[in-house]
Each structure stands twice: as structure tokens, then as C-alpha cells.
Length: 304
Image 1 (tube, rainbow, N blue to C red):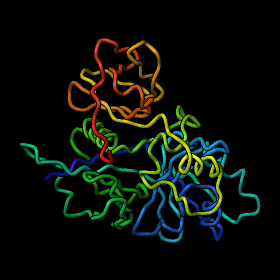
Image 2: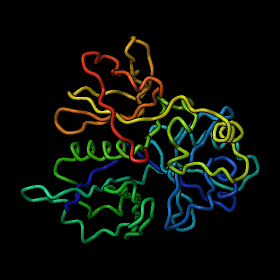
Image 3: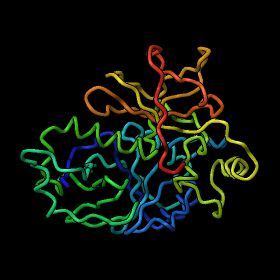
């Protein structure tokens, strides 16, 4: 095995500090924040009153504060929105532009020298999925079976050497997360989906036994009584076409039946994508908007 290492500028962090940080987040996020520790991260959604997802966080504890990782492009907006609900709570929410996120992929060894593999003896990784391991100044979290994210201040990574082809490695990291069904929810998708559409209850981003939070009643009703007619599924497409979040999926009759969540190159001439799609449309050919010449290949979700 070799390591492939690249920056993940698309992912940033917010620090929650102060004596009321945990209780405040407990009342805002869909996950039981008490489950987030210094050795275990959890996924947690922040929803509006109608149960629509505004942001998806990965949450864990680092020293004496709570870290919330999410899409970089929404850090400032989400922080400002959460601050409106602080009232008298004694905490500070701070987007940390001085922190860095790095992906480390464990892949079969390639022929020729692998500069990144030389870092393997310097890094400590968690063995369990979502586990947190502590390195010299930064944390390592196991995101998938093959990938770890490293989070920490810029200076902690001064001795870390990136892969010699970081753009290719970035695409591999994004494709790996898509195949695992893990969404990265940015500005284009805010308030578009209820959590079940993104399989967040399967990804353990919802605690159905905790107290109230925005949208809880609707989310609980969907879990207990509702029928989810749209779900996130993974697809592949040959060619170099890339689809931005929000791009439509088209059904056999030309109607829109789905929405792209994330897309990444998968090799030199293909891409993989995660899309929320009408389940009753899956039995017929589906197409990416702008690529009606070729049907999407349906892939198996890891938890199907």
C-alpha cells in the first residue's frame, strides 16, 4: 500500500469554545453532541424549521474546544446564522482560516517512486471508521475504509509532503467519498433536502433519542411514519463531463428526476457522482443534464 496526500481546501472548520458550547450545539444539531469525543467523530446536520438541511458537520473534540468541519464556502454564512440563536449562551463560534484539511488515501502501490509514501511512518491513523487519532499538532479522522482526513493549524503540517500529482489525488479522494455515500453540502444545496434524502439516518448523523433541535418534529415523523420517495444514489458516467452541485438528472421521458450533490473525476475518462433521485425512476435509464447521449451507470451504495 502507498499513501496519496493532497490538500482539501473545500473543507474548513469552525471552533466552538466556551462553557455552553456543548449545550448550545446539542440544541441546534441533529446528533447527540455528547457522542463526539476526542477519539470519535460524528456527523451532525443543522436544519431549518421545515427539516431541510442547511449544513452537514463532522464534529469531534480537540483539547478544550469542539471542532465542526464542513464545506469551506459556507463557513462564514453558517457561523453568522448560528450566532443569531446564541441568546445568552456563553460560547464563541469561530471559522478558522488558519486551520488546514488534508486527505490521505491508502491505495495499492504504484510503480516508480512514491514520495508521499515516505510520510507513512510519521502519521498515526485511527483503526475504526470515524475514529480520531492524535498526531503532533493535528488530528487524523478515518472517513472511509481507504481515506483519512487530517485537521490542524497550518504550521502543524510544515513537514508533510503532498503527492506529486495533487489534482489527481484530490479527484481520487472526492470519488472515494462519493462511492461511500458521504455528501459534501455547499451553498448550492442548502435547504434543498431533508436528511433522509441524503441517507443521513443511515450515516448515523441523526440521534432520534435526543432532545429538540430545529426541524426535529418533521425529521422524526419522516423516520416513523413517512415514505421517502427520493434518496441519494451513486452513478458513473464515461467521459470527462463534470457536473456541478444542483445539476439535474433527466428521466427517460425528459423530465427532471434528480439533483447532483457531488461529482468527481474517476480516472482519465470517467466520473462518479452522488445524486438525490426519485426512487421510482431508477428502473429506467437516467441521464445527466447536457449528456443525453449516454445513460448513467447505477452503482451499488455501500449500505444497500
